[in-house]
Image 1 (tube, rainbow, N blue to C red):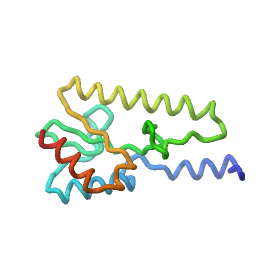
Image 2: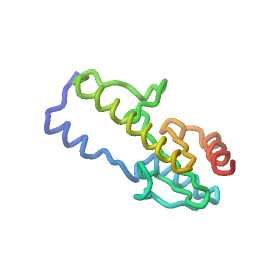
Image 3: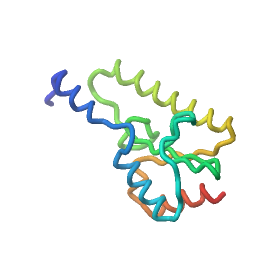
Length: 135
């Protein structure tokens, strides 16, 4: 197995985006096609949710399975090298996500997490989102 040099790894990691990711764009397109309108990355809310429905007081986060550790998902692999780096990084991300969801709940907001792997079944995802937004 070839290992990346420090420079190559740094270059590769710099390409990882936190906003406007492919999964997020796919969810936004789906939600828009369903007739819902939303705001993006609301700075005034904990965690800056990806999609914000202010009138409904609802927010959707689109999480990558690898970075946000989707439990039981085959995409939530653990890299074989530098485990002492990755495990604390993943734990910190999961804890931060939990804090954001709890903070939003304390403010009276309902939240939904859409996982990257859920994009495979657009009909099921649309149903899940519709149920969340209409309840």
